[in-house]
Length: 121
Image 1 (tube, rainbow, N blue to C red):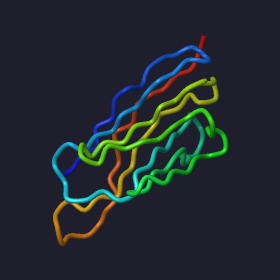
Image 2: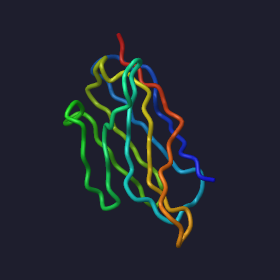
Image 3: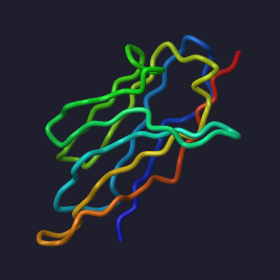
Image 4: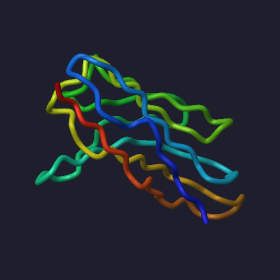
């Protein structure tokens, strides 16, 4: 069984920065695309950023120029660097990864447990 373990959330003032991390709990064979989502109270979960296995990235318009997604394939870890944070960035942030656990297996999506990010003065 694979779990994605998130860390790095917390309370930050507007204009501040946070770095989220999401790591697989055990060794795995292959990880395809990795993503960060967020869900604010009363809102639907939205896609924030995606990074492909080769490193190509995509961002929601609301975070372009402020957030940076990156990955360390050797560590099976994805990061989200969040700068110039705004109160509207307040949400629970979830990582998602498409993983093949064993060679010859099939890819499946796995989710982190979520980490709270609160932007407030």
